[in-house]
Image (cartoon, rainbow, N blue to C red; front, side, top):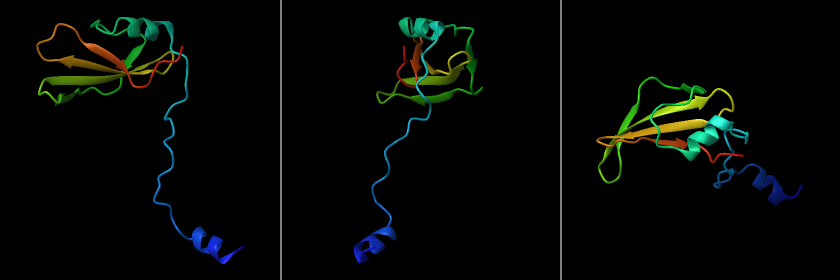
Amino acid sequence: MSLFCGIMAGMTSAVPPPPVSPCPSVPACERCLALAADPRRREPPSCLALRNTAPVVSQSSSGVPYSMLTFCCRDCGTVWRLYDRANELFVSWVPEHPLVR
């Protein structure tokens, strides 16, 4: 081993490792694909389970308040975020990661 390799072995890198996907790519079930096709419906499909009971309340960069709940699909594991904005008729279902077909 050269002196340079010995010095380098004791140093830590300032560059972080590349991000690792927290979940493997699993194909979305038919109900999650249907939800993605109609993300404004209020009621969650029966396959979704609520992750936390308390909603996260915040506001957008333009100052519009909203609440967010997180759900997980029992069938395929897809994680969904349900956004409900104040004074709006519809909600928005957004998958945590892009859906895999």
